[in-house]
Length: 510
Image (tube, rainbow, N blue to C red; front, side):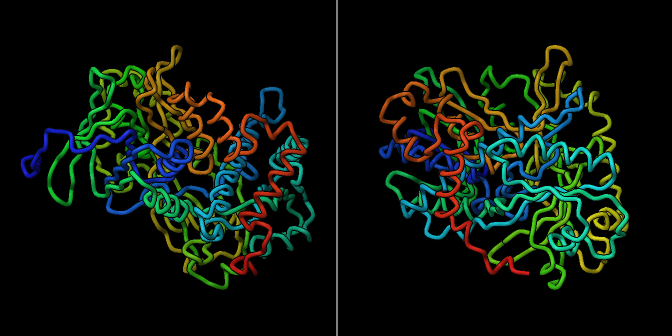
């Protein structure tokens, strides 16, 4: 189809910064850059016709408001039987950084009403059986000793459980051993709504341009150190070139193919393994009314992190929704609106061995995904009944969630490893950076984008002026909240007030 596109060879614009992808990561980085250096010229390019239509969308996101309060896969057991809380502590700390950024933007009137995107919703972990309950109790003891988790409650009391999770306790036998932790500081975040709000603010500023329905087809580093980028305007049916000093690739599952186009040595050997998902979405208003929390369970052995089962209250477009899942699936697409050729097209000489090696080392995961795809409606209902014993098939509808692309990277010993996390890949000179991976993703966007700034604008970021500005935006900048209880409490008190998290929303009343 390339012959349909008229090509402009002379660069049509020369912004300082190009952001590829109109999701939460690009929005966050763009807002931070304009706060730190208001004179910057920024252009955003998005392949779809709407903002936040892929992973940032509320229905596509595998989990909202990840703060490590309830996600049991963030606290694995060590070989000696103790609970490793390091990942949970890191993610909880990162989520506090996100809340500080959002609070700053509310105080500056850049965000008019935080209740459009964030709502207080308790976060709970729920398990059954002696082995799992003992693990949860041990996890609670380890976490609650940390300032970030000190408000965490633990109970095995049947009557208290009936009060906290009435829908989940109905028709459940009293003799079964159950355990639950609860954090009232939990939130639900609609990252689709937040992304749109951030871009509305960003695009109201001088020298910021948004280009929707534009596809990046070519990236090349020039001898003068600048990047030249070719884009297709999919509406006007023409191609043009743009050049910039810095490019950020925040295109979700589309980041890997773009990183390969950039052809930087730091990107060699990276591959991607796509995992799709599906939700059971409750259609019965009476059932939705009876559950007002996020409750996470334990994942099956071999399941990817995005498939940790949870019964999830969300606020989407001002209405309460109740979701269960996600059920994992497999597609060769890297994006929900992508191509079935995405995975085969990503194979290159430099990542072939890591990809094959990771595949051989993750046969149980492949088997798990195949089993998930083959599930019948009755089998999915059985999984739901472990959380909601009275669930009926007619009250729930199966819907597709978003695509996730997990990172595969070179490994000296194994040849290639599959990683469940996020990774910033940047050029040595800081002129380009790409964000790969999926979990915990959007929730830690502020922290991850500050890392991008440090990697790519290291010298400038160390100036007293920018350090002071970052401290204004993120009051805990440079300090670990997990080891400073007084600061942790004061910052949480402030962000909860500014973000209206201490106000009980009528959307959550049972």
